[in-house]
Length: 77
Image 1 (cartoon, rainbow, N blue to C red):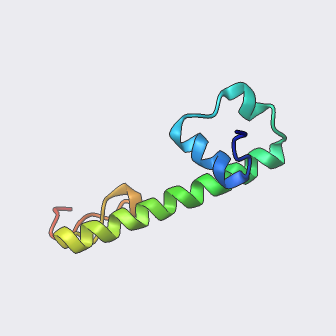
Image 2 (image 1 turned 90 degrees about the vertical axis):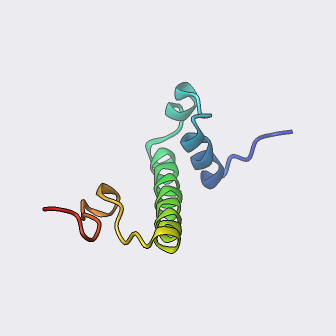
């Protein structure tokens, strides 16, 4: 069975570390940029989900450098 070669599937492989360098760099720069864009969107969605879970579970509003370096409420300056 052939692997899915859509940019979204390739971005998942890239994030999971299942994308050999030779294969990745054999793609055109435009194809690599499209894969990077999908990977970035997936990672941003995962970060947003984790932040929502932290807020729901612990009431944490901020998670440091993930959201621009803000400090959690009540932290010292």
